[in-house]
Amino acid sequence: MISQMPNITAIIVNYNAGDMLLESVMSLLREACVCKIIVIDNNSKDKSMDAIERLAEGESRLLYIRNSENLGFARACNMAIPMVQ
Image (cartoon, rainbow, N blue to C red):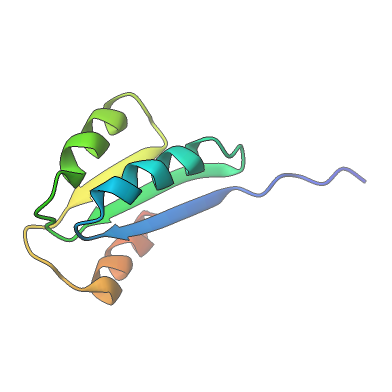
């Protein structure tokens, strides 16, 4: 019996954690089972957007969405659910 590697979609909700965000996304991109990474930024005031936008340009598995206001963790997670396939 051959077991198939699962396809995993990771959802990251970010608010002012740019230092850890890039490291977290890079770690997920190294995993073969990760087929999609959805980053929802809750209108961070740090440099989160700069690093992730550059990375998203060359990486088809990464989707970056920046909210115009902080929706809170639960509402931001709920935004990503329809994008999971």
